[in-house]
Image (cartoon, rainbow, N blue to C red):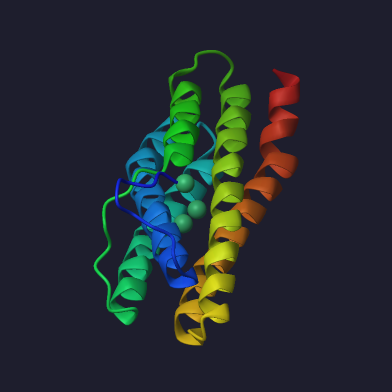
Length: 170
Ligand code: ZN
Ligand code: FE
Ligand code: FE
């Protein structure tokens, strides 16, 4: 979150818009990063999981645009410094050399930090929208929140069933 000059938080509506703009930037950064993470993955199931979540993430951006439309607002530009940093850390794992399975475990570690950040962000905006009487917007955001949880669960399952055991043998 970065407040631009002149951007004021005078109401909960202002905060909801600010938070949505931040997440929109975060999701756009992730759309750029996930193809590299998929290409870097050695395990085919992990590669598929990243590709699947890339498709979902594109829908997350669309849903945010839809939320802005429902709120009769144009999304302003924003920089999510947190996602910028998380994506940088993920990029370090993409560029890392060494044992393939350990690198897969590292990619999962980076991706789960991303998912948890998004889970926090969507939980907040969902609750703000509900508080403001916008159950329509809240349920749209809940749909994305459910997908972020599912993505995180998939990564957990892959780590514990396949990737970590292989990495432990490296
Ligand atoms: Zn997302
Ligand atoms: Fe942020
Ligand atoms: Fe996500």
